[in-house]
Length: 278
Ligand code: URA
Image (cartoon, rainbow, N blue to C red):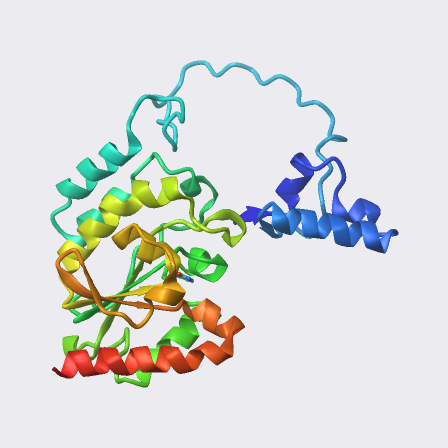
């Protein structure tokens, strides 16, 4: 999430300053959206280039508290982020501890632009764990995975085979998480570096939740767990990941764009249902 009004700090011209030129305003809006700026912080834009220079502040007599540590690690630091993720993930002995470890992980820049660390939703005792890609705008705001349109479709799809994230019964329940816990700006695809960095947490998450089956939805979780992309070829074909049966499926956001693919998704759901019954 990036706020619209913050854009006036990076763009020489705010949208409101050029509204007399419809085409230019539309182009500026597209530019903001492309940059991942999709949210307003206030009712009116602020042109920060026109603000009077701030008077220098008087130095405080004495700091009451030691300076807070930086929210993010210095990107130039020599810490190997993947090794740091492995150590933090391995140290977590419970799902709550893992949630805390991820929320405190300082090496992923996505955290800087996110409102919430989106950890999981559903019943951790569920037989089926769904692994998605990353939070979108609604998930970032709610702090829960798959709550937007794609998530609502996901709920309807799995309800059709008797599975629900709200079920207290492990046999009928779903547990849902994502490869990335922070929203990529503008909903761009996660980079290979981001996937590699968060993979130790995903593996630990699955080990601690200990589901009987994993469903990966879309390319990002497929790449994360198998190192391969190509969800259209992989979908519907059971394979194994982390010692468990894994079913690749197309992402519900794709199904919203390509309803003709729902037929294959339905076949995949029936295959999952048969596996759970067997
Ligand atoms: N898409 C995902 O892959 N995960 C979410 O949580 C939301 C949308």
